[in-house]
Image: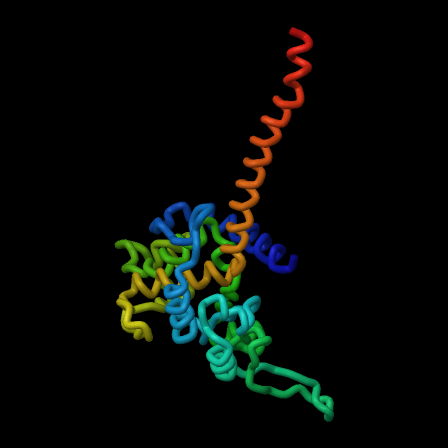
Length: 254
């Protein structure tokens, strides 16, 4: 319920900005997870997680994802423990009543890179880096929006004044965004040797964030398709059962 309320709030509060930014340009991608039979590309998710870890995690949190959820990406228990151990989380109180830091374990969620919102704003010139867990759900055409945003940093049109601390992005409503360009094409060298241009990084981080927004997407679609098949079969069976039951009545009337 909390995830739903936060997503709804993001949609409501972002609506005016999106309406005002009618000049935003989105690139449409035929994502593997689109449609009723869509599925996630596990290799792409792992590459997207690598992009998040090496580029995005220094500013953006994943508040609703636990390390153990990475099993969906194909990581085994030992790998998940090793990934979690790279982070520290606050725990406590201890016997002295004080909070303390400890290495994360698979049951922990990804910690925020900042202790609080004020610290985050102070480190980013007053801008607050949002949590990315539900970002794909919080934006209309979320996957296309995220991909377009990652690849939308271009020179501002002639005559456009870009204020200090702002950057021009063709996919962002209004064009002006406080986040500097995160991807340059040589940021991440993929462990699997996959091509690592800006477009590749953008596609993979988008797929990963689509997964963080709805880790249960594949199971939900499987259940939905199975339910539709069941209802269709029941409808056909009910129709023929009705005809069989009423056959004698129709004969008697004839």
